[in-house]
Length: 264
Image (cartoon, rainbow, N blue to C red):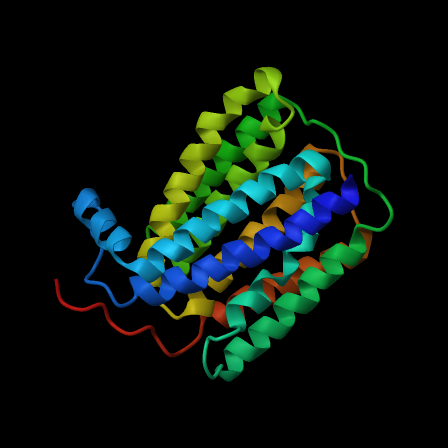
């Protein structure tokens, strides 16, 4: 069952990150999206066929991810999803030195995260109060980071929010009373969606989607240790997290911006 969960996790990351790549290309070419005009902004996105294909691909990937969490520990599923940054790098055109360094550091760090899991595959259900506190704290941190309104800040906020939604999903797949986490995790994903689309118009693919994916991958692994009694990984995991943070810095400080959105 765990092997099937890992396979579904890998398939999920291909669908989700391939969807991000399509969405970024489409959103960056649209007039500025405005929070004060949500219906008009959503309509503009859904009229773009390339964006819609990417969005539906991401929904399909998330469904696979939920099934994977039912079959395998959170940390293992996220480790299987570690190739997401590589998917985003494909077709991104010529990479700047910082982007190339960021991709290499990200893949190395996420690979070490996978190795740090060792043979321990156990997972707990986690205390509901602790999961709720983690999700609430994630929303608060994301709000502070997103206040910068930069592409990188919005991408980090999106990654933290998606990660909070993933933590809530892991708690909710147990069923029963834990289904009360469903509204919260959907809210986290909804806020992350908004932050991600705004980020796409403010930065290059790897500086936005890439940074978000790093946070989405790394934070749930930390949550797996803190909330669900999964393997700690020792020094190796500490080194892996340091590499992931360095990768996020390299990608987030890429000099070249995305093309400016067309005038409204």
